[in-house]
Length: 238
Ligand SMILES: C[S@@+](CC[C@H](N)C(=O)[O-])C[C@H]1O[C@@H](n2cnc3c(N)ncnc32)[C@H](O)[C@@H]1O
Image 1 (cartoon, rainbow, N blue to C red):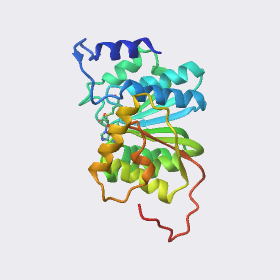
Image 2: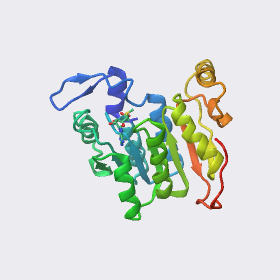
Image 3: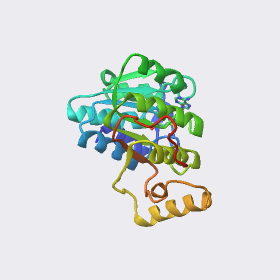
Image 4: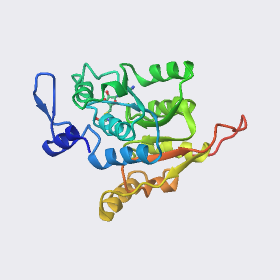
């Protein structure tokens, strides 16, 4: 794995432009999740990747490392607060790791940047949604990502411990032609069971696609099976 990533996870710190150390957690992507993203991209040879929510750039580094190891691939990172809130640390980390030529950075809100990519006719093989965690913004992120995503591509939702994110995933699995992809559990079975139990207790009476509660990780990987062919009045409760 990448030397900078090893250093960041072992010291639990990232550095700003002045060399000051900052603990990036819990904001940043945990190591096990980053590894899952990296392996998914490598195993499926995914070339055009995108992430919504860069922050300290840890997910960015895992994704770019996959492109580096495959010898091909280009990554787009969207974040409106990279320079203001995150002191450009994500971009600095990309440079420090030698991945600057693999990243296109868009400093904008995803609901503004994504429609522009759609208008340009761009296409994607992979999208990691980890931006605004509100239900409406996450649904809008998916709406545009779906237009960009090739059939056979993957969309990954982070933080499915949040009911609003699970609701979006539930909508997709009940209404769109996407398939839940099995993720190899990196943590212990006990940890996984705790996560599932918490999800049940959060909203025991809420309708939700059953399988989501049983995912032992904090992310959900969906594979696009076909383009949208719904009849105009199609709807399944979610
Ligand atoms: C949990 S952090 C992402 C962590 C990052 N993946 C990492 O590994 O360091 C969420 C990020 O989403 C960004 N964000 C919030 N609202 C957004 C929006 N509307 N569009 C795009 N990004 C947004 C925040 O600035 C923040 O950087």
